[in-house]
Length: 253
Length: 241
Image (tube, rainbow over all chains, first blue to last red; front, side, top):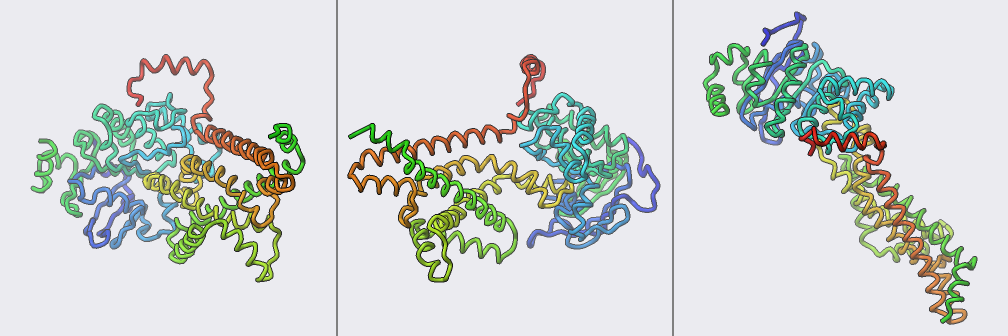
């Protein structure tokens, strides 16, 4: 566990200011504000349907916010749909269901974006893929297709695929929720290692062990609102909003 | 009944020419039909209301009338608008337009079969929507739509026999003409039937060849060594699904 903020910049790397989001008449996010400093790891917890995933998808414009503003590196990126692809190149994302491209091998999954988006040569991209597969501890699976990998291996390839774009921040959307229990550890270990190396991370998860180990701050959401935003130390010492406390008791039994 | 006459017909230039015309019409109609189908399917993927209207009208028109009607319509009605095309071109035009409607539905089903999450993941990497289509969606969709496309290929070969009504000298018309000159229907039609079977067999072989080529796993060249390693390795790694 480390204390935030680690790097002093004039503005946070990511600044979410009072965003709202609705799907039809359904208000998913209400006036949510959150700052993420460079090198910080922020864990978002909360009951399902509380808007955690939507908050992440607002950040990289997969679901653009209706109201409020999002600043990335001090620039307002909220409703700039035209530049969304450029923004997303700086923001890695990992999904609950991995979403590896099924027609490509593990290495090719990692190489695709560097080659097609950054225009990198095949051999350079291949070098990056090999290095990243070593980093996520499955170098031997380079030539395997997604359906030949376990869930944990697929998710680690997905993390490597996001890292290949050299993002400044990583968004994890319930990265271990679709995994069998015995595979959760291997994915969390990779994420914790990245965090400890200074990768700015925004993590939606139910894994409180991970939060304890890697988070600088913990955010609790419920009903589309951010109820609690506390340092990890403060959060686990029990000085939290009663609703957060109730949720914690539920998931920890 | 004379099998010698069947053989004579089989190797005769007229029958061979008829088979070539049948093949030509089939291949051209499939080619242009696939292009039309791809355009229609991609138009349906867009969110433009006007495009949806056009594609809907197109599908309604060309799936809602018999293809034989469409062939006769194109051949007989276009000249009254001053558009004079040869019988073969008319045949290909009508068959392509008809085929496009069916191809569009097949291609659309293939595109829709690719989970939304695959597109989302590609977008999240910073790809433009056109790149997502080209590098993620279409390569996966092609494998899904190939079997129904194979059906269409074989169907088109047989559908092409309809063009004999506008006096295109295809395989069926040649056989029919030959037979009516000497009343040897069995021999002439058997020869034509054999040609059709040979052509459909070739199409089926082509389809299975393409299917094997498109299987991504066939790209991975396995040497005997790595195969052994793979076999030995299985015992150690327990989590491979």
